[in-house]
Amino acid sequence: MSEKEKQVPCIRCGQIPEEKDKFCTLCGTPVKNTCCDEPGKLDKGCKHVNPQTAAYCAKCGLPTIYKLYGIVN
Picture 1 (cartoon, rainbow, N blue to C red):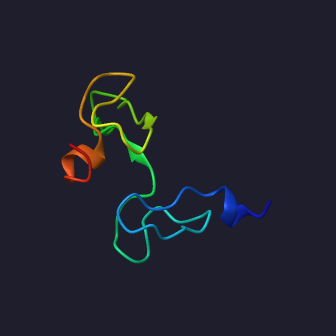
Picture 2 (cartoon, rainbow, N blue to C red; picture 1 turned 180 degrees about the vertical axis):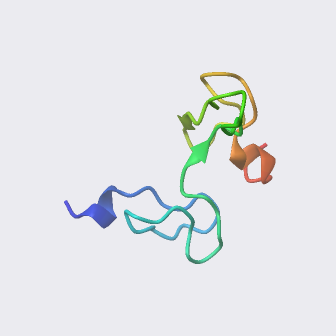
Picture 3 (cartoon, one colour; picture 1 turned 60 degrees about the vertical axis):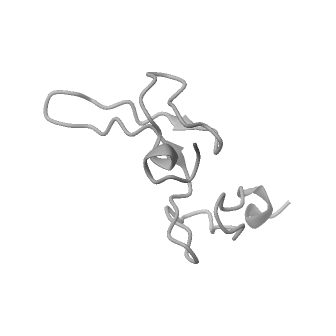
């Protein structure tokens, strides 16, 4: 199985991303649905990678970036 077959299609447009891609090259959607809790000066941030359909982080309960971008409800 090639690397391209292992990649999950973009949730918005269906494009298969390259392994190194962080964003879809057709529509700009992030490839991974991470927690919105970004690292800061006082917090390490969650950065948990959630399933594509997750609206809230399974680890900390904050919205995912797909929820913030309106990709999932």
